[in-house]
Length: 499
Image (cartoon, rainbow, N blue to C red; front, side, top):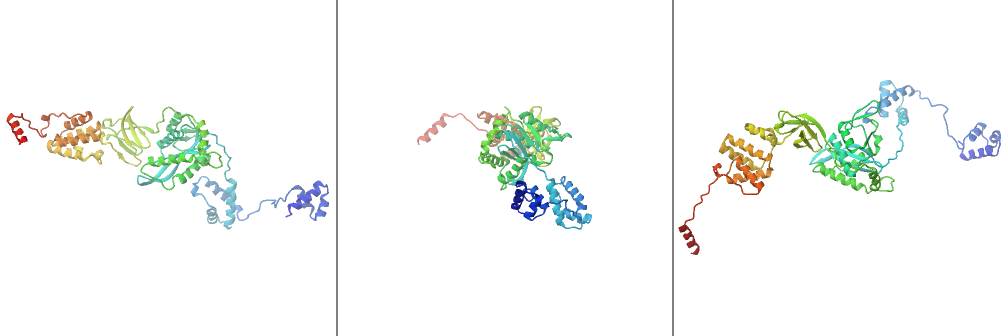
């Protein structure tokens, strides 16, 4: 191949000085075809094939390779063919006799040829992206999976993270409410993947039918929802990158906390601290650029959104309602009625009409029974024989004086004592447990072993006055003997004191 200097000399000789190509061939000692090429190109163009090379061993199998690569696009990413696996299939299933190198070269070229290309994006202020990610944490001494809600603001690179026990509708809603409160405003639009938490159905024309819960949060905060292409996580690359980097930066090492509140307090502090750094080639910090986002945000509504999933259910004959494969108790007076269950991230609230009739800690187990013993006491008062076998009362840790009171009542009143003990327990439907426990201890100390006495003692504690008990109603109360002082007894007392 001739050097660039020869190209320049020949082109100068022919194109500038006006000499013929024949003369140039004689002067420079090269063929006229070479002189023609030098006149056509300012630098050596390199070797160029007139037609693609033939691959007699591979070409008959190229359609098979292309079909395998096309099918891989719909396969799970971790179960797609490697070049070696394609070679093995060609050899074992189709009788290919060539080597692995030619197969590897073709697969590499084919993948480069069909690889997706991207357009550089510029993110204007006031928009957000949302996704969920997973991590491992130790909560309350138990190693478990954390489902982490991420919201990223692509313009400023500001972000928000919050961990949940499960990726549920109520966690999805609570993540939005918490993120909006953290930033102090509502983005103009939010980009999502096609999660079932937001999209009930993708229609043939590409439009999405939203879930009822997602429609509710949009209606409340009035932001615009946008969705990426199905299976194309790179459409929301900012938050996808945040999921990966956030897990490495802020959830490594494995977080250890007593509760999810502890983990989330740490994550929120990390969100705030990260606003002091400069991301990428930006000349301003994340916090400074966040001001541009906040200027473009909508103001928060006057009242926050209630981040819960609401369902209408029917109470069973055992006064239980089912939510997410767990059963929660309600007062027995609501048995066999229709109620509304509101599932929050950390609790379950049950309503009858507009009246709240039960509130329980949320369980993420399967097949769990979450009881409030107070819900069953009214029924047990009618069926006192079931007191010892009542499942809702199993594991109810009451102070020791309650067991003492029950033994005394049953010893002194027989079967009626068990019913009166249940009536004492029912006082906790109205009064705090500590107040009733104090009244029980006082009744035992005074020997007034009855429901009426405990009730009066509890009311006296509320009213901060001495109890007024009718002694005739309490035969076991020790009686005091009070006599009128005689003059002789008083004189004897004076003599002793002067002696």
